[in-house]
Amino acid sequence: MQNLSIEQNRTALIVVDVQNGFITGNLAVLGADKIIPLINQLARQFHHVILTQDYHPANHISFFDNHVDKQPFESIRLPYGEQILWPRHCVQGTADADFHQDLDITHAELIIRKGYQQAVDSYSAFVEADGTYTGLAGYLQQRGIDTLYLVGIATDYCVAWTAMDAVKLGFDCTVVQEATAAIDKDGSLQVAMRQMQHLGVKII
Ligand code: VGL
Ligand code: ZN
Image (tube, rainbow, N blue to C red):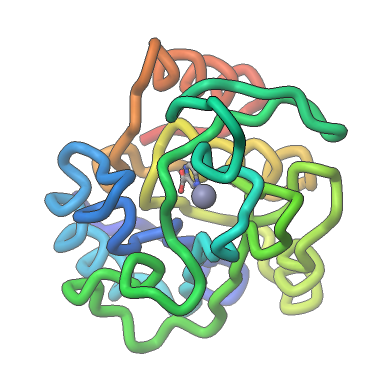
């Protein structure tokens, strides 16, 4: 990847969910280990780097085994809308929730955790599934950051939802696709790519 010409003061790299759970754990995403060197290299080009961390309590509503007679990847209706039921992943205080040991971004300035409320999931780093703000937009705005680059896992869930909320909240947002990895179940990647493009997320 070539050098990006970025205005460092107003730009941040958001590194989404580069955690064991999505790389070697129950929800391992194909090829996710391969993107880590690229993410490390890219991060060195940014003064501002933010990490996100999927961080669920053991009894989280998004885990299929916390429901009776449900299978992984089935959907259920919840008060806030449709919820996919996932294999147990990124449980608070377990190695599955830790950042991968090869992730090497010592200058990251903020870690934003999401999905930590038992009854609410959050793919987006900006807005939880029930519409509650995480505070990330406020943090960025108050620090004069209006331009975002996104990398990480999973392209079709947490990266896409974060990117789409970023645009809706007025940020200029670019996904660096070669530094993402997708779950891509039942065409989910193509759907997410179309939705991102439709909303004005740039993809490079
Ligand atoms: C994610 C499914 C469930 C993600 C998180 O990081 O994309 N996907 N929780
Ligand atoms: Zn999750």
